Amino acid sequence: MYKIMTPGPTQVAENVRLARSLECTNPDLDEDFYDFYKETCELISSLLHTENETLILDGEGILGLEAACASLTEPGDEVLVLDNGVFGKGFGDFVSLYGGTPVLYTVDDKRPIDPELLETFLEEQVRRRKRNFKYATLVHCDTPSGMKNPIEKLCPLLKRYGILTVVDSVSAMFGEPVSVDEYKIDILCGGSQKAVSAPPGLTFVTISAAAREAMARRRTPIASFYANLQVFEGYYEKKWFPYTMPISDIYGLRAALENIRSDTGMLARHQRIGQACREAVRRAGLKLHLECGFSNTVTVFDVPGETTARKILDTMRSEHRIMLAGSFDTLAGQVIRIGHMGSNANETDMAETMEALEQTLRKLGVPMPESLSAVFRQELKQ
Ligand SMILES: *Cc1c(COP(=O)(O)O)cnc(C)c1O
Image (cartoon, rainbow, N blue to C red; front, side, top):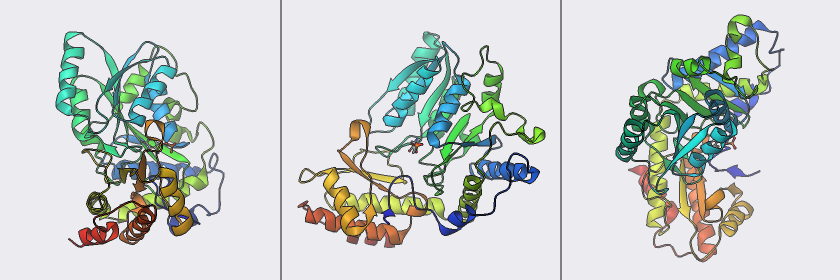
């Protein structure tokens, strides 16, 4: 077994694993399960500070993103795709799949999206050229690079231009602050396997009244069943789910969410560990991949010239039983990612990881002016 210090999936606590082994009822027919499902959805809404309804869908994080696009996009719709990373750009594919026209707003992938520059773009495109963006897609933490975008500023700005907002916070929520109502997010997507710290398998979305209205006003039917957010309408009153719910996954998710509810220091801990990890990486002479906009859920550094990503990852696994992640798409082979989100964000596992990484890099001939693990421990004490 490895200690998984990856930016999702993350380590799963024992009480979550045990909850998944509880006896099962028939989730379609047992009315008590409808209460359990609804209460779990309400718990998610309350943890994300929203009055909006939450739905839990049976599929990984990607399903939530696709369901948001499938449910909002009609053929010919223009959709603004904010892109400074792999997931940012990826939203454009879902928009196209459902017949929409993605308009990419592509900016520097080493810095967060700047609200002022976006405002200039909106002023030009929406006010002058009368472009009609039905909604915009944004990524809170673009995990392959660790980029955190200021959704608290970007979403209210988009709403001022009459644009609905779809936010992928799969790898940020609960490690970074998210306040759905205050930020004016119409559809927010989350997943079970990142900071939530349950196994992969579930996605959940919060849906605003405005997003519901946009779905209700469609002229064409939603071109999907599984990715259709409208098929859940009235499930509780009707005691009818559109498909059989994965009951054990949801038992596990509930336990994981209750862990989050009782963990009042969670955000502060992410902040402290993220900060200490970045400082250690810098002072050890490694290069953080980004210039700014670091998410406290993952640290990404460039692979030093003396070695390769493969060698670092293999050595960490074979000699230290710790799993870190490389990256993919345009970043494949170029960076190493340390996932310190959710249950991974604890000082003991992180100190062990930094110590192992230091030994690994020294073994591979990477010079380090300061000790990665000593700086990390020092920073935590401050
Ligand atoms: C992990 C992740 C997802 C979900 O991807 P899966 O392949 O389903 O795990 C979506 N968005 C972001 C930003 C992610 O980090």
